[in-house]
Length: 554
Image (tube, rainbow, N blue to C red; front, top):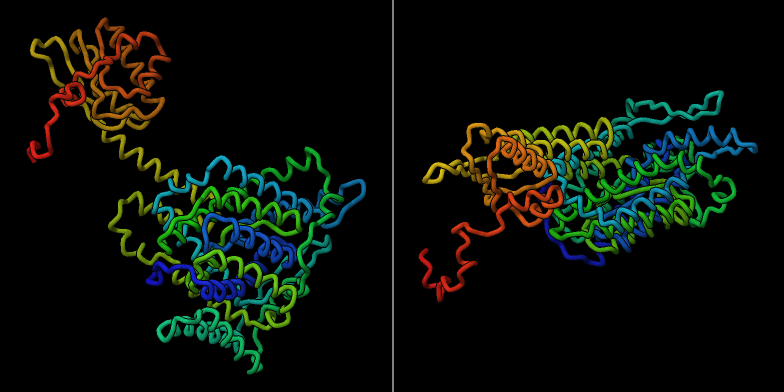
């Protein structure tokens, strides 16, 4: 991340202005995702308002912006098309049935997310390695950049004979392209230059207002928010206050067939939504030098999606692009997210004609600057200095995020990191061997973690056939970590007993002892309970403690 990273305390003025700026940047993103999912843009905007408001008030991370995100919208594309087809097969055919299946899936998605919060699964985001985090940020920055590049084209709506909608993109060219590029560069220039002059007003909001004023008062013919919505098949930005969608209860059949149909989509959307939200929360933690509450964020995301589905809105999650814009604009408190949601609703209810005049170029310029500031440019500098496994994970997560999906990318990154960690620790198992003075007892002092990855190396340390009659295995410098390790100890003891030799286990942890006792009663004879290591004499002989710290020899 860039030098904008610094700790700023929440400020009401900054939060209000940051919320307004973020709401403007939210509109084209949400509308674009609505077109991807083939739903009415107002449905997505309503969902963005509801989810954004609830998570801002109750979420675990002030400053985090949530809305109808593309990562979730993509998951529901197939559900909607299949739902339309199922609706036409009903005894009384229902058109647009996919929309009602969508709402039910969004509600179930919220239930899954609340369950994750109640079971405190949010804490597992701490297990995500930094290399995965950097790959996540870089991958999403590239995805957002490519989404903005697609704005340099016009959408042409086609309807097949079966009534299926599809869109063709016609790239801009000639004067229109040059004007679009000029306005984008102007917006980026204002955002870059203004903070060098003053930081009292948000640069992104000022840039949007300046570019919009030039277009409106200069009579410049460019693509605007209004024209973009109409090109995609929408009727405009004008909408109504969200109310409970009673048609959901009227048309949707509440049976096992519906549950089995929406369940996979709801679970995948819940997983993707939580991963993106919690990863974005981690990013905000780094940017603001504070710490959010992952479990609380899970609960808030779930509540937001449930209410959104019941009120006719689509699903959503934390949005890294809008969150970074909010943080850059000075938004630190909950008021920034609340203001974003309220402003978005105000645009829909009262200011649609004004917002529809905002040029797409201004919003693209804001998003381009956000991409530049979000991308971890330091990854190019450190990629040759960090372990090869971390560098590989960073590149893989970035690539998979762009090509496939965020959730898949994070899972792949965590799995590769875990395997690399297991492989490195598997090589750290050591055994120091020594004989007693009479040569009748051989002691193995084990060093390093004993777990599934190091079992093979552990077994190779022992010479069962050639060892003397008495063998001791000392685990004072080792840690038995899992069931595979217990099984390895169990099998080793059996091998020595088959050879008719006596084996003793020393300095096992208490939990390991309990598990071995449960596995077989004979371990009560094998495990040495007394602490006879000289390193423990202080605990056994309190009188040997020095009278004061001055008696220690450093």
